[in-house]
Length: 372
Image: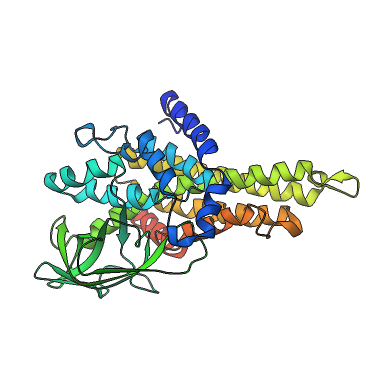
């Protein structure tokens, strides 16, 4: 097996990096950070749609590019490097993957072309406050007679979404349901968060029309399958963010003088950079394994997704923290860009479940494999 991108994918990745460097420097993220009510950068979102990235995993018959999951992983890495303030993850990693996985042919035909064109922002609504949602636990959101009631919080990009996929209970069984976020019976309230460049909302449903996605009773299994797919893609964003932090720290260390010498010559700084590099390469290796498993769609995906999720979360958080430390007293200031990646590293650690949850899943997968 070849754990690397193809030449075409590498070229697409290089073009994506060039595009985002020109269109999404830190001023774009700061624009949303300074005005959280915007929720995201709409101009950047339209440009990304114009590049066709939203349709990478979508078949051509539905207006996409049909390039597959590995190509999407390549773009995800560059999105993470740029710390882009757009609902790319919510729409493509969660919403689109759920529709591809469980949507009927009619649902796919109705939703996927709008996603590929950039006309539909999707969001994933599973959490119901603090704690871990797991099979067997009661769900507060319930569907009766095709109407959804309850509260989901936090919902990433919930206040800017056009469609929501909601995990809810109907007749004692959990299921995934499509809900029009702009329709009646849906109210979204933006919440304060550590990373305002990604909208976070409390979404309240009061008799909102809901359409089931997939078969009745398959909610938990489908939700975990979507999370496994999203975990790999998020891991690539985290790898890209880790690389960006390492580059920022290295460039600063080679240009900042203290006591007549560059601080990069100090052993303590060298150790920081080396540790960032090692964790980043470990995360990259696990992400590549995850990309292979995601493309193949085999039994290895749950294990690979958990490993990629854990390594990516640890690497990005560590690199963001050490980048601030390398910059010294100015590292935590508003004017420095270090905090942009620190905020995003924390957001990505939680958006698909905390690392503790994925460590438990990794152990479970290893135990199952060893028992086989």
